[in-house]
Image (cartoon, rainbow, N blue to C red; front, side, top):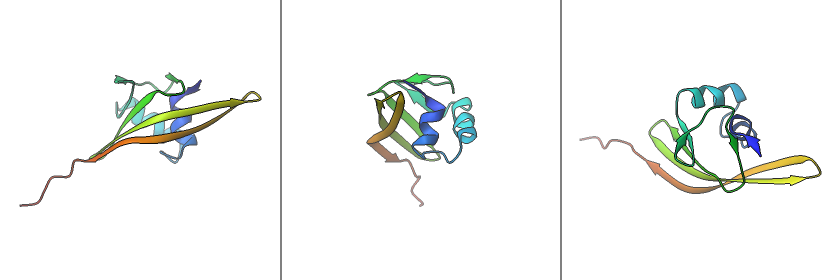
Length: 87
């Protein structure tokens, strides 16, 4: 089990943990369809929804524990670009 802000920075979705914390405080990240706080604990298999600009990205958390260390990665589930077409 890992905090969501550490997970997002460890997976390089955000470059720094402070940027991940700001996105979480702004409500741009949901875990299992609920708005997440930086201290939200995520488990293996949780769905994480990210609102990055005009994009919506849904990923599935992959967390493995080996000898008291957590190894994190993610699997892309869905990605949508909500760009407005130019007329």
